[in-house]
Image (cartoon, rainbow over all chains, first blue to last red):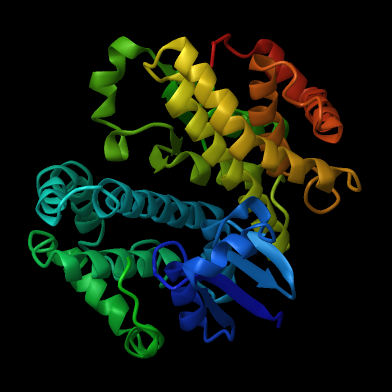
Length: 205
Length: 204
C-alpha cells in the first residue's frame, strides 16, 4: 500500500470527505493539519498553490475531489459500473457546490452574526438547500443507499454535509425525514462514528 | 450501446468537454441545444433546474464533470490505474475552476469592457492562468501526453480551455511553447478536428 499524507488546514471544509473515506476503508494515512501562519511558506511547494494536497509515496495529488474520489476507490466506496459511479460523482459535485455556497455566501460574509443567519435562513436555505434536500428525500424513499445497493462516497458526503449543517441549524432536516434518517445511519457506521468521536475537533466547517 | 442525449444551451461552456469526448470516441448522441426563449419551460424537466444533463436511455445524469468523466470512460479516455485517473481528475478540476472564473467574471459578466480587461489582465491571468500554464508547460517538456502514455480527457480539457482562451487572447501562450504545441496536437486529432470544423458556431 502506498504511503499517504493528506495536507490541509485544521478544518473540515475541503478535506473532510477524504478523511471520512480513509476512515471507512480503514486506510492508514498521516492527517497533516497546518496552521494558517505556516501556509505562506509552504504555498510555493504545493502544486497550484492550494490545499488540500494528497502525497502518495511523496508524489503530490492536488484538488479535493480528485483526492476524495481516489481514496473512495481504495476504500471500496465507488461502484464498478460506470453509470453508477457517475451518479455518485453527480451527487457529490452537487453537494460540494452547496457546501461552498454556504461557506462563501454565509460563513465568509463580512457581516454581523444576525445578518449571516438571515441570509442563511431567508435566502440560501429556501433557494439552494431545500430543493436539493427535497430531491434527496425522494431518492432515499425506498432505498438503503443513495446510489446502487451499496454504501458509496455519495452516502458519506450526505452524512458529512447535512450532519455538519444540521448541527449548526437544528431544524434543517425537519421536513426531510429520509435524509435525516440517512445522515444518522451513515454517521453511525462504525468507522465513521469512531472518526467523528475520536478525530480532531474542528470549528470551521 | 445506450441512447445518449446531451442537453445544454447553444454554446460550448460546460458541455463542450463531453462533446469532445463523444467525438473522440466516435459515439453517437443527440446534441440537444436549448434556445434562450425555451429555457424557462425546459428548466422544469431538468434535475436541479440546471444543464448540462446527459440522458442515458431516458434517465438523467446531471453535473458537467460527472457527465464528461462518464463519456470519457466510454471513449477510452480515462486511465485504468486509479492514481493516473486521479491525475486526470485534478487537471480537469483545475481547468474547470479557471473556466468558471473566466465565464463568471469576464465572458458573461455585465461589467464594462475596460473592467473586464482589467480583471483578466491583472488578476486572472497572472494569478490563476499563468501559474497553471507554467506547470503544464514543465510537465509537457518531458512527456507526450499529460498522464500515462496515451491521450486522456485531461489532454482534451487542456486543448479546449487553453485553446479557447488563447483564441481570445493572442499571446497568452507565448511563454508556454510546449502547451501551445500540445493544444495544436490535440486539435489536429482527426475526430477533434472534424468536430471543431463542423460544430455549431457560437461565440463561447
